[in-house]
Image (cartoon, helix red, strand yellow):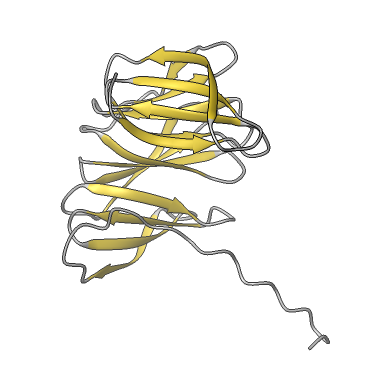
Length: 193
């Protein structure tokens, strides 16, 4: 058994997904009280160690990033694996999926962020700007902006409509291992105070 590298819970369901550093991903039934895990439902052994994964918004499949730079879509019901058409040149450190499930971002030790069409598994573009290992990614609610953090002690804000860098902020003393967008502020309604 390998060391667990990631755990993610399914929204609205009593299931959890775990992955370890030997390439095993497991789906679990979780105890209804949420205190313990129940039984293993299924598992799959990838040929390479897993570095990251994200559950698709529909809960039916999972995007899995491996140390060889590939991204695979794992269908939970059929257990089919569909590799994306292209791959990174180094391990995939993080994956993020848009709320609508249409695009995914991947951060890699090849210093790049990949933007992917999930339905077709094709690369839309590479976002290049980090000078040392892209470590983390996030997408805002309407999928118009992204963040990436890197081992180069910076984070970058990206425009996902034009696939361009909006700005880069440097100043950390070490790599930026996680990035996130906060919730959108409520919109103000004219005439109401």
